[in-house]
Image (cartoon, rainbow, N blue to C red; front, side, top):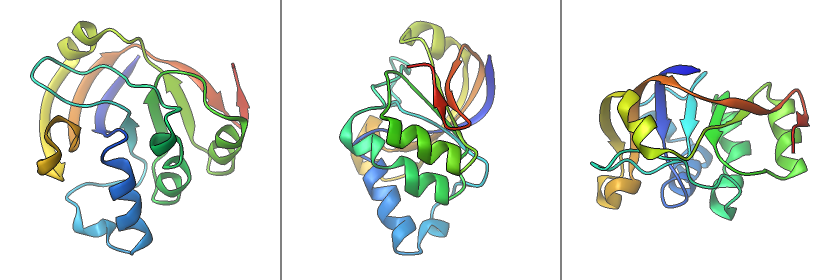
Length: 145
């Protein structure tokens, strides 16, 4: 089970966050990426549920986000061996969560838009999540896939 503060982003926002990191402007966001967890999801009134972490825009964000301090990635689906290696190099992990929106939404205690509100539910959000089931799928350079 995973509980705590989680940043939420998916294919629309993660490239923007990575660009801010590349430009040295990540500190302009009201979010702490050091030791953070990121859930690959959109946040809507209907709830939250993971999207596929192996989408091009999402999987390409792993390295930059690791360099920015992210240590836990939550999503679904198999990721590439190269991504597993990047996680290992940065002592980060990838965990799969069940794609059950109602279950995850039930555990969401708070939510706030951190950046890019123009993207609507695909903006960068920070949520407080309680007891989200998760299975570690990649750690220490190895994967269950």
